[in-house]
Every structure is written in structure tokens, then in C-alpha cells.
Image 1 (cartoon, rainbow, N blue to C red):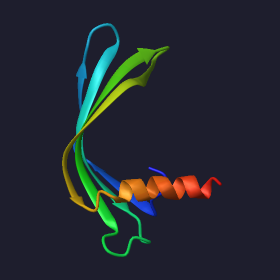
Image 2 (cartoon, helix red, strand yellow):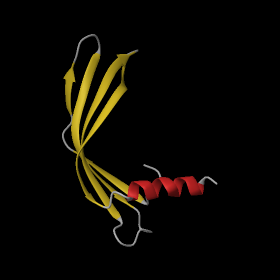
Image 3 (cartoon, rainbow, N blue to C red):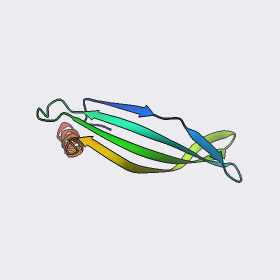
Image 4 (cartoon, rainbow, N blue to C red):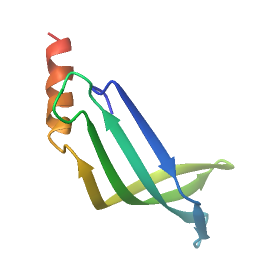
Length: 93
């Protein structure tokens, strides 16, 4: 996500279910750490998520055609998301 100093995504095992007619669904859990060091009081925001990615095979290649993210928990400073967005807007001026 733009605007953060750094992010780290730790993914769990990816489980893929084949569907009908060249479709599949990939599901996995993730723990995503966001860091914004200019926020002195609490520079870290962590979210635990469950991802579900819809896949479709076209011309012999699998491509993502849909995605859904469900946040399971948050730790740290969720206001960092807004601060990161504002940082991106200011840098584009």
C-alpha cells in the first residue's frame, strides 16, 4: 500500500479449490504489518486477514478475476491508514 515506509505480508498456506469450467478459488490467511515512522506515538499497524481470490484460466494462464479480504483482527494504530493516504496525496502535489 503506498504511503507507508514499509509493509510486510506474511502468508499462510494457500489452498486452491478447482471449480468448474477452468475456474478456481485460492484461499489463505495473512498477517500484514504497516510501518509509518513519522508517527512517533504508534508507528505500527498490523491486520490479520483472510483472503479469497477467484481465478479463471484464459489462453492457458491462470488470472485473478475477483478478490475478497476479510479482516479478522487489528493491532496497533489503525489511524496509520489515513496518514499514509494523506502522505500520498501530499507527495502528488
